[in-house]
Length: 162
Image (cartoon, rainbow, N blue to C red; front, side, top):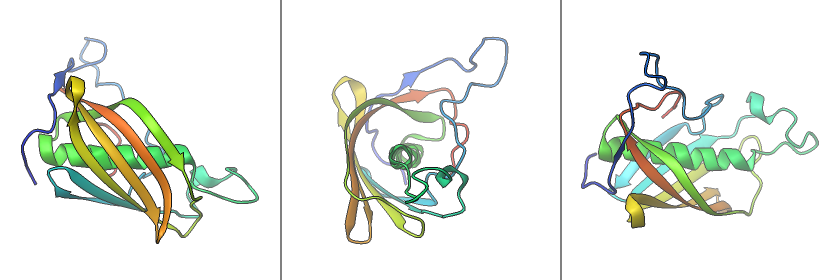
């Protein structure tokens, strides 16, 4: 799906060291933060992730009560925004987290829970993309996340899963 640009795009160099080396990763990708994503409109994207007990990152995170780490909820939102930006701005535009305005975790997600992320993405001041994400599992709200992303052109995202 393509639509009108949501925010301006900054340009960065093709390589990280100027010597022809591949670009450095913008972030680690040890797991799949989402299983699927769908752009619903020029301002909305949804994504889902099944929390699995055998995912390596869960081991040791509250051993007596295994939960999906909150930072991974944020990463799930980021991955949904990556999918949104690819669909609305093209493959070589990458959203970088510029500001994590607020995060409110309200329900712990456990193995077997299906995380659903719904993001509203709107242009903001200073050519940023303002994102409000509601994360749910069934009828329970797991988190409300408000963030701003800077759109960067020139370095394709490495290590994404959507």
